[in-house]
Length: 193
Image (tube, rainbow, N blue to C red; front, side):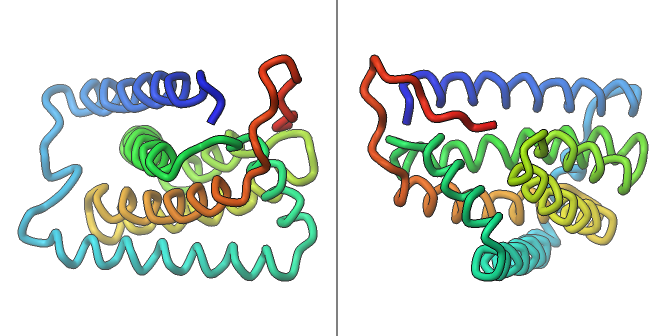
């Protein structure tokens, strides 16, 4: 991994998760109940629902990778951006992104504006002007709807966090393992966008 990527990502996700938590607290007018994140009595079923949803999203992406050249190009671009990322760093990134993004998008945005606006914003922020990034945004829309539906159906964030973590952990570890070797310090990094 590029030396500054993990600290920058950690800082970004800390800010995003904090913003989401503050938003939730202000919207609720007080402390955030633990039951927003998990219900111990239902934890097994909630995690199972999250893992099942995450596995479905991974199967959808695998089909896209198999049938869409655009998906394969996107993966090459993302793998280049992850050059030098260790398995441990990939798992840390997966956990940080799952927690922060679910607190912000499903906890705060969806809690305030509803499922569709949260999923659309999630997709928009995973998209970009390049055609391959538009595909990433489309997948993010589907993932945002799935994670949002988990929150609606299960009543808390744990299943969405589990699904998001599974998708990111599998994807980031796989991409990091096929990433080209990191560029020399004097060479410019490959562009992500």
